[in-house]
Length: 325
Image 1 (tube, helix red, strand yellow):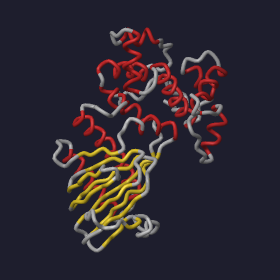
Image 2: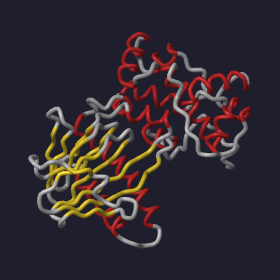
Image 3: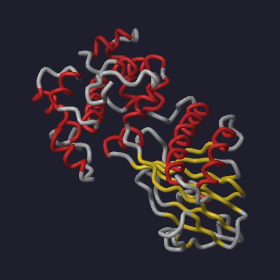
Image 4: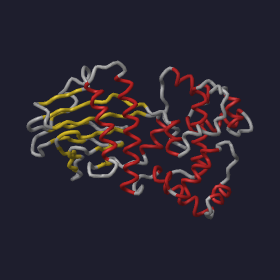
């Protein structure tokens, strides 16, 4: 089927779980992956990150310190995510004054940084998002999420890290493509592991996906976004009262049910714009009575009319979600 004429009300049947559906539409962009090798005594300060970053210790041990007594010991096999993290220090000596971890190495010329040996080795990489997508994912995560080497999923993560490490150090054709794809795989593996070890506690919207009732409601909206869902219909479908459903949905997702539905529809619309579908066709497929009604809904989420938004996107400009909505 031509993607320009496919029905956006449903997602690919191969991606039936809500997390897969969300990732199929999120504009996730894996940035470069890097390797850090250090020997002797060392301490480096790194700046705050406004996006999502992963790190993993594949040899040795060290500390990560966020100040205000938030310090965590890291050992070989540990993997972690940083989400909107403040400035932090990586070190193996807490008494050593930290150096600037950006200025100390020539990151512009190499993906591998070295300091006096290789007793400790870390891999790292970051992910960028469309601004409105970042709100959906990053707000669900704590600033520091650790998957220790002793956790059951760690062996699977370590297998991915091993391949990623070979690609970072290698010079084979297609290495950049492979590192980006492996980073995507690693992100999903770490999120799975986080759900396993925390039962979703503290993971916000991600926890909602595995909640028996709220996850089902999200699945219904994803499966047929064009359906004229009402609060009563969604609550009834998961056997909850309207008030209890609304309260639990917002506590887990951070949005009211129909607000989430609106944003999901607009993500589907944005994906169809990317594929070249017309505004009138998208409006009809998503259940809007007119192109004008769809345009108002799109502008409410993305702050721009659909055509203008996509023209700006096409030349690389990114717009923040409307802060007043």
